[in-house]
Length: 553
Image 1 (cartoon, rainbow, N blue to C red):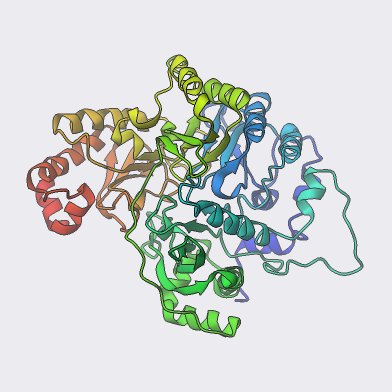
Image 2 (tube, rainbow, N blue to C red; image 1 turned 90 degrees about the vertical axis):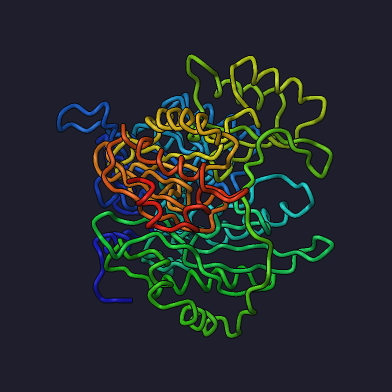
C-alpha cells in the first residue's frame, strides 16, 4: 500500500473498525453528522442527504437515506410489509427499488434513524455493507426456479454476502444497543483490515445466457455453469467492470469486465476473496477517482492480475469456458415456476413504489403482501417479482392491481420496460441535475417519436443519470442521457439491452428540452437503413461514429 493516502483512508484507519466518530455523534442533538462520521455511516448502510427542494438559504434540510443488504433482492411478504411500514412511519411514504436489487428509504431524520435500523433488524433485514468501501449487495439472476438452477445461484450469492460482510461489531453496538466486547486482543477484519477497500466493490452472479444483472459492469461477475442434469459444476469469472466516470477527467471512464478464467464451484469463495484481496492491497488509495478495481485491471492487464491472484491461491485458474450469448429478460407478466406455482413480474417506473392520483401502486403491493403472502424479489432493472403464487390466487391479485390502476406485466410499453433512471435531485448529494423526476417526460416524448416511426415494438434501452457516476448503468444502454451540468446532458449512443457493449459519446451539454430532438435523426436513419432484426445499438455499432455524425447533421 502506498504511504500516501486520501482523507477518506485516514478516516477509515482512525475509525476503530467503523465506530468513531459516528458512535459519539449519533448520541448528540444535532440534526446532522460531520463529514468524518458520514464516511463511516456509509458502511452502516446509510447516506446523509440534504433535500435541496426544502433547503432555506444556507440552512440545509438534513435527512438520511437507508439502503438494505439483501442478496438477490429476495425478501418475504412480512419483510416487505415491514419496509412498507417504515416508509410511512419514518420515511417519505415511498420505497425506491435500486438497480442492485435492494430498497432505499428516504427522508428519515437523525433521531429516528436508530429506531428504523432496529425495526429492520427485527424483521431480519440488515443494512451493514449496503454502502461504503466494501463488497456491496450481491446481485443474482432474479427469476424463481423455472428449471431448478436459480435456487443454486441464490445460495452462492447468500454465501458470498455472508462471508464478505464486515466482521466488526460496530453495527451491533451503534444501532442495536449492543455492548462493545473486549476479548483482550485487538479487533481485526480478517479480509478487509483497518482500511477496508479503496472503493466500493460490486459482485453479480448469473445464469448462462441471462444478463439481467449486467454482469460486465461488476467488479466480479460469476456465470454459473451446469451439467446436463442441471448440477452446478463451476463458474466463469469476469473481472474489472464498472460504470463511473468524471466529465472533467479523461483518465476516468466506464469499462466492461474482462474474462479471467473458470473455477470449480467449491473454489468460488476462495477465489472471490483472493480477487478482493488483490484489490485491497493494490487498488489506488491516493486518488478515489482511480480507486475502483476496473482501473487496476485496466492498468495491469488481465494476465498480470491473474498471475498475482494465482500466486495467492497456490494454483492456476482453468481457461474460460464456452457459454451461451447473453440476453436480457425482464421476467414481466405471469410465468410458471418449476414447483407448479406462479410468479408475476411488475414493471416499476424508475423503481419508485408510491401512490399518486392515477394509480395506488404502494397500496396494491401492500395488500397483495398481506392477503396472499408472496415472496418478493427486487430485480436489477428496479422491478418487482411476486413469487410462489398459487393458481387460485392469480385472479385476486390481478383484480387488486387493476382496481388500483396499476399497469402490470407485458401491458407496459417496450420503451418504459427497458428504461431506467437514478433518483438524483433533490436528495442525492452527487446529482448535478435532474433524472428520475423529469425522465417520464423525456420517455413520453420519445414514445411519441418512436410510435410515428413505427419502432414501438423494438427493444430499445434508454437510461438517464443525474451525474456521471452511472448508478442506472447508462453506458451500456442503446441511448444514455448523463447529467453534465444543470439541465444539460451528455448523450451516449450504441450500447445494447443485453449489457455486453459500451456505448459511445455522441454529444455533450445538450439542454434537457433538446434531448429527444437530438436523437430523432438517429432513430430516423435506423428506421431506413437497418438490417433485418438489427437493434438500434447494433446498427450504430456497425455503421460507426462517422455515420452517426452524418445522420445528425
